[in-house]
Figure 1 (cartoon, rainbow, N blue to C red):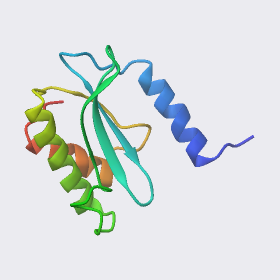
Figure 2 (figure 1 turned 120 degrees about the horizontal axis):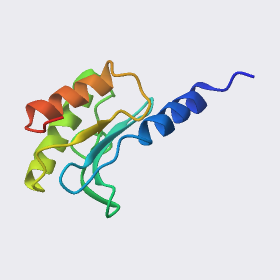
Figure 3 (figure 1 turned 180 degrees about the vertical axis):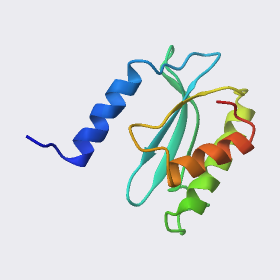
Figure 4 (figure 1 turned 90 degrees about the horizontal axis):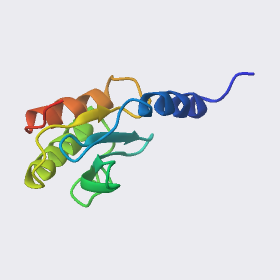
Length: 117
Protein backbone atom coordinates (compact mmCIF):
# COMPACT_ATOMS: atom_id res chain seq x y z
CA UNK A 1 0.00 0.00 0.00
CA UNK A 2 1.27 3.41 -0.96
CA UNK A 3 1.56 6.02 1.81
CA UNK A 4 1.20 9.76 1.53
CA UNK A 5 3.99 12.16 0.62
CA UNK A 6 4.15 13.31 4.24
CA UNK A 7 4.59 9.74 5.47
CA UNK A 8 7.36 9.16 2.91
CA UNK A 9 9.14 12.35 4.01
CA UNK A 10 8.90 11.35 7.67
CA UNK A 11 10.31 7.91 6.81
CA UNK A 12 13.24 9.53 4.98
CA UNK A 13 13.80 11.93 7.88
CA UNK A 14 13.85 9.07 10.39
CA UNK A 15 16.40 7.26 8.23
CA UNK A 16 18.60 10.37 8.06
CA UNK A 17 18.29 11.04 11.80
CA UNK A 18 19.84 7.66 12.58
CA UNK A 19 23.14 9.12 11.38
CA UNK A 20 22.84 12.90 11.71
CA UNK A 21 23.37 14.01 15.30
CA UNK A 22 24.21 17.44 16.66
CA UNK A 23 26.78 17.89 19.40
CA UNK A 24 27.79 21.01 21.30
CA UNK A 25 30.87 21.40 19.10
CA UNK A 26 28.92 20.80 15.90
CA UNK A 27 25.14 21.24 16.32
CA UNK A 28 22.48 20.16 13.84
CA UNK A 29 20.82 22.67 11.49
CA UNK A 30 17.29 21.27 11.11
CA UNK A 31 14.95 22.59 8.40
CA UNK A 32 11.15 22.41 8.37
CA UNK A 33 9.26 23.44 5.28
CA UNK A 34 5.53 23.71 4.77
CA UNK A 35 3.53 25.16 1.89
CA UNK A 36 3.30 28.55 3.64
CA UNK A 37 6.39 28.82 5.85
CA UNK A 38 9.95 27.67 6.30
CA UNK A 39 11.86 27.51 9.56
CA UNK A 40 15.26 26.33 10.71
CA UNK A 41 16.90 25.66 14.07
CA UNK A 42 20.43 25.03 15.25
CA UNK A 43 20.06 22.23 17.81
CA UNK A 44 22.45 20.68 20.32
CA UNK A 45 21.07 17.13 20.55
CA UNK A 46 23.29 16.24 23.53
CA UNK A 47 21.52 18.72 25.80
CA UNK A 48 18.30 19.00 23.77
CA UNK A 49 18.57 22.78 23.44
CA UNK A 50 17.94 25.06 20.48
CA UNK A 51 20.88 27.45 20.15
CA UNK A 52 19.47 29.63 17.34
CA UNK A 53 16.29 29.68 15.25
CA UNK A 54 14.74 31.63 12.40
CA UNK A 55 11.42 31.41 10.61
CA UNK A 56 9.46 33.07 7.83
CA UNK A 57 6.69 33.63 10.42
CA UNK A 58 8.72 36.31 12.21
CA UNK A 59 7.54 39.91 12.13
CA UNK A 60 10.25 40.96 9.66
CA UNK A 61 9.27 38.34 7.07
CA UNK A 62 5.62 37.62 7.88
CA UNK A 63 4.11 39.78 5.12
CA UNK A 64 6.19 38.12 2.37
CA UNK A 65 4.96 35.05 0.54
CA UNK A 66 7.16 31.98 0.76
CA UNK A 67 9.63 31.89 -2.10
CA UNK A 68 13.26 31.01 -2.71
CA UNK A 69 14.17 34.62 -1.81
CA UNK A 70 12.28 34.44 1.50
CA UNK A 71 13.97 31.13 2.34
CA UNK A 72 17.34 32.76 1.62
CA UNK A 73 16.49 35.59 4.03
CA UNK A 74 15.62 33.04 6.72
CA UNK A 75 18.99 31.34 6.13
CA UNK A 76 20.82 34.66 6.42
CA UNK A 77 18.98 35.49 9.64
CA UNK A 78 19.77 32.05 11.06
CA UNK A 79 23.45 32.37 10.12
CA UNK A 80 23.72 35.71 11.92
CA UNK A 81 21.97 34.37 15.05
CA UNK A 82 24.10 31.22 15.10
CA UNK A 83 27.28 33.28 14.83
CA UNK A 84 26.07 35.44 17.72
CA UNK A 85 25.52 32.24 19.73
CA UNK A 86 29.10 31.17 19.02
CA UNK A 87 28.31 28.47 16.44
CA UNK A 88 30.49 28.29 13.33
CA UNK A 89 30.14 24.64 12.23
CA UNK A 90 26.91 22.68 11.88
CA UNK A 91 25.74 19.41 10.41
CA UNK A 92 22.87 19.91 7.94
CA UNK A 93 19.57 18.05 8.44
CA UNK A 94 17.30 18.66 5.47
CA UNK A 95 14.38 16.97 7.23
CA UNK A 96 13.64 14.47 4.46
CA UNK A 97 13.03 17.23 1.92
CA UNK A 98 14.92 17.25 -1.40
CA UNK A 99 17.99 19.53 -1.39
CA UNK A 100 16.44 21.78 -3.98
CA UNK A 101 14.65 25.11 -4.25
CA UNK A 102 13.80 26.68 -0.89
CA UNK A 103 15.79 24.21 1.22
CA UNK A 104 18.87 24.73 -0.96
CA UNK A 105 18.43 28.53 -0.87
CA UNK A 106 18.26 28.48 2.94
CA UNK A 107 21.39 26.31 3.16
CA UNK A 108 23.44 28.41 0.74
CA UNK A 109 22.40 31.63 2.47
CA UNK A 110 23.39 30.20 5.86
CA UNK A 111 26.78 29.24 4.38
CA UNK A 112 27.26 32.78 3.08
CA UNK A 113 26.46 34.09 6.58
CA UNK A 114 29.42 32.19 8.01
CA UNK A 115 28.14 28.72 8.89
CA UNK A 116 30.25 25.79 7.70
CA UNK A 117 28.71 22.44 6.77
